[in-house]
Each structure stands twice: as C-alpha cells, then as structure tokens.
Length: 625
Image (cartoon, rainbow, N blue to C red):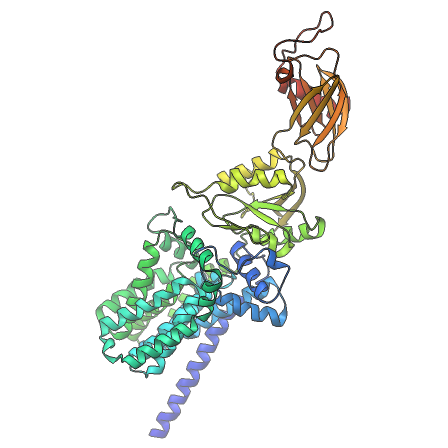
C-alpha cells in the first residue's frame, strides 16, 4: 500500500510540475510575443539608457544620469539589464525581455505562495490567473521597474510565509534579502516590511523572533541594500532634491481610479473573484488568509492614499489578487471535487474571459512611430541638431536613446529635467499649479539659441474618424502653436498601420515674431533684423518703396547699412519681409521724435498700420514682384 501511495504521489507531483511548466510557458508566450513591434516609451528609454551607461556606453552618458527623477528609485533592474547589455549589446528589445522574464518568474513564485499557504490546487489556479492577467502582461512587456519590483515583493512574501508557517530562520534571512532587493528595484518595495510586521502581529509570530535572528536579518537586509547605499553616497543631495520634487506631485483622479485601471487592462476576472476570495479569507482566517489580507491592506492602502497615482503602481498587488481569486475558485470547486468536469469548465471560462484583455495587452500601440522618427532624425539631421517633443517629463529621452540627439521636453510636469550634458533643471514650484517652465520659459530660450532645430509632434491614436481632431489636449494645441510661431516646415511623417502618428517639423526661424530696428549716424542708416527665416533673403522697404535686399544668416539675423532716405522722418515705416512672408516694422520716432526732416513737397505720413503694410509687401515678395 505504501508503494502504491508513493507512486500516486509521484504521479501527482509530475502532473503538478507539468501543469506549472505549461502555465509558465503560457505566461512567457504572452509576455515575449513580438516585443519589438513598438519602440520604447519615455520611462522605458530612461531605464534602458541608464543600463546602457552602466554597461559602458559613453555616447549615451550625455543623455542619462544614474539617478531616478521620479520617486527616487534605485537601479536593480538597470544593473541586471546592464549585465545583459554587456553580453549581447544595447537594444530596446533586450530591455523589455529582462522585464518580461521578471514578470514571467513571478508566476511560479505566486504558485509557491499558494501551495505553501493553501495547497497545490490553489497555487496552480493562482499561477494561471497571474499568467493570463492582461494587466500583468501589459506591464511585463514594458521595460519598466514594476515587474522587477513585483517579483521581489512576491519572493519576499513567499519567504516570509515559509517562515511564518514553521520554516527555519533561513527563510527569515531569505525574506530580508528579497526585501532588500525589492527596495533596490523601487522604493515602495520597503512596504514588504510592514506587511510581515502586520502578519507577525496578527499571528503572534513575533514570539519566534530572537535577538540573533533579527540581527542577522538586519545585516542581510542592509547588505542587499548596498547598491542603494552606493547611489545615496554618490548622489545624496541630488537624490533628496529629486525626492522633494516628486512628493509634491499630485494626481487629480477619482477614488475608483485603480479599480478602473484594473478593469481596463485586466477585464473583470480578478475584480469578480478577488472580493469573493476576500470574503472566504475573512470567514476562514487561516494564516494564509492573514498573509494575503496584510499584503493587500498595507500596499493597497498606501497606493490609494498616496497623492500620486499611475497606471503601473498596482502591479505588486496583482499576485495577491490572483491568490484571492484562486482561493475563491478552489473553494467553489471543492464542493464538486469528485468530478474533473467543473475544474475543466472553470479553467476554460477563465481563459476565455482573459483572452480579450490578453489580446489587447499584446497589441497596445501607444507611442507607435517615435522610434522610427528617431531613426529618421539620426540619419537625416546633423549630429548637433537639437529636438523638442511633447512630454510629461520623459518622452524626449526616446529620441535621445534612439537618435543620439540632444532632446528636450515640451509640457507641464513636476519632474526635474536632465539636460544633455548632465545639467539638472528643477521645476519651479511656486504654487499648487503644475509648473509651466517647459511651455513658456525653456522652449523659447532653446529655440532662440539654436539648441533646438526640430519639433516632433506625435499622437497616441490615429485620426479616424476624420471629424475627431488629432490635437486633443491643451499641451498639444500649445505645441502646434509653437510649430507655427517658429515657421515649422513638415519634413517627415511616420505612419503606423497606414495612420499618420508622428510629424517632424524643421524650425525655419528663431523668434516667434521677427524684429527690426535701425539707428542713424550722419547720412547712414544701420539696420538690424532678428528672427527672420534662416539663410533667407530679406527685402527692406521704406515708405512702401524698395530700399535694399539683404541675406539673413544661419540664425535668421542680419545687419546692413544704407544711405538715409531723403524723405526719412519719425512717422514713416521701415519694413523687412523675408521670402516666407515673415515681417517686422518700425518707425523713426526713437531718433527724430515728432519733428520730421524736410520732406519732398506733397508727402504725407504713413497712416496704414504696420501689419497691413507688411502683409501686402510680404505677399508681393513671395510672388516675386
């Protein structure tokens, strides 16, 4: 009988391993499929660029600093990616592969938690729910920090659960190591410490702690935090400056923002099953139920109350939600345990319900065309040509990563900006309003200085139907006005699925409005112009009559000297018009006041307003008259 029992156990173990491998393979397929179809997003480009710098890419060092500007996170993911880059070279796909592997590995870890706390059935169901979670797949396919954080958090919870369930102190030390790595991945990883603390308090597990075990755990935790300590040592003041900028950031969203995000990316499988599992946990109140409740309570309450919200912040809770959902399904299937049909039906329903979110997660095309736009800039612009694009703080780094060009943001955000070369520009925080530095202050400066020569406009969606305008936001409208004010000429359009998604404009002047001025020395008139079309001829008119033609330089400026017209006076207009119709005008009141020189008999002062005069002359100039 014992022999048959051992044989049956081996068969169950083999089936369990096969099922787990199949689930993990399913998770890997969903996360790795066609990863390079769309280029990196802004934050992805930042992390990939930081990893490239760690791997020794000196060219990208100009654009990326080894410090997080957001919540002042650390660099565990970047160190791992840097090792991969060192072996295989710098590519965008590898950055996503590393994140996808962490996301995939969270699946067997979630299984291990479920098996430890409830049994193999719950573990396998939880692994399946996480494997087909559209939200986890979507974030697992992005080169962000969250999948690495989630893996480390889940690993820490598993080690803590093993210790709470009677394991030796080595599991407590393993928890300390995993917790340290979780903090290295992202600062919010520190929340696993209060999770375990709450579990120990509710289960009275603190009675098992000894001075020795606590001391060793603390040492292990601190040793695993060595990369973070090094970063603090090297960039301490900057770290806390970035942190100060970040904690002032506030998201104005409804209280149900996170459930809405989960429903959007994940469908309703977890949203339906997890609350049922929570009710079961409240009724049963086993050690496993306490662990899951503490996990959700600590991290969930923190994310819900923290003023800054983001679509990716909920990911460390998804394994816990999967375990609660598995708890609910396992309890329901336990009623009909004698038949395999209900279990097969439940799995089929879960897979069918998860298919649409999974399909959507795999085919997200946000920021499509930005990579291709960067490649075009790299191949068709001078190496010192600067670029500006719409950004919430990071989109410009996509152009820096792919094109190796100086790139700058246009938008309103509370993040510090790292300029090419490493200069840090902190946002001005004079009020509760979002800073406008990168809308009204820096763009004109950079355009006037010649640091920016190209403007890149993009949209996250196609323009079908035609009645739906591409320019949807205030920032987009302001950027389009910037393109118009600086004479932007469309030089390239990037299409995705036959839809225009990115437009590249070349700046043709350095000021939004051309300027002209003159001074008089004896019988010579010195004329200076600024903000005209770059390298274009400028026609000068006085009192509506042609005076001279000059050539603007590469900055759109010119200086010339002509004889003072015989009929010059304070009320007559000097007008400059370039070949594109840009114009400027001025009078001589600053020189002659209201006393006119001796005009020819019959002359009168100009009474036509400058725009009307200039527009007529400009139209004639463009026509070649």
